[in-house]
Image 1: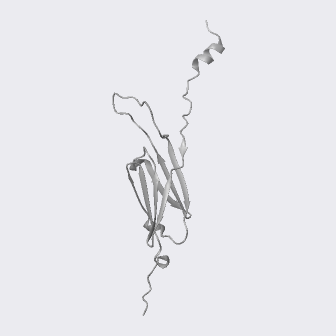
Image 2: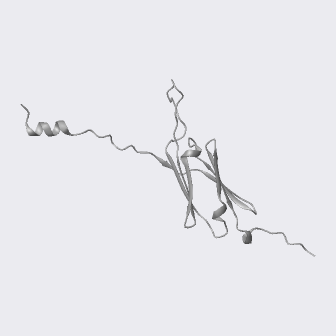
Image 3: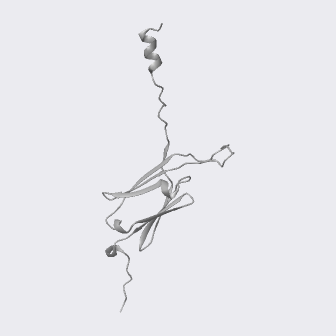
Length: 128
């Protein structure tokens, strides 16, 4: 015979604890010329499908999720960089054209190209 208290304990479902995923701020090189600004961000472990680049209210946001999968039959014996999510925000000036922004990911490196608006591009003035 079981008591009501034991029945309640037996019926409690076991839930997995939420997993914590680290969020990293990716290192970024910023390059500028007369036509555009380029952001080159290190996001090791993230593929193109894992990356999202958005612009809202003149803030460019980079979000990515990285995963490392060991080849079949192997276990990960060591790792020199953290695996998790990446997040970084950049305030954009009115000098750039948000409509022309492009982005690509290759080998864990994200490149975002932000074109400048025509009226702010450097122009060479012909001297007569």
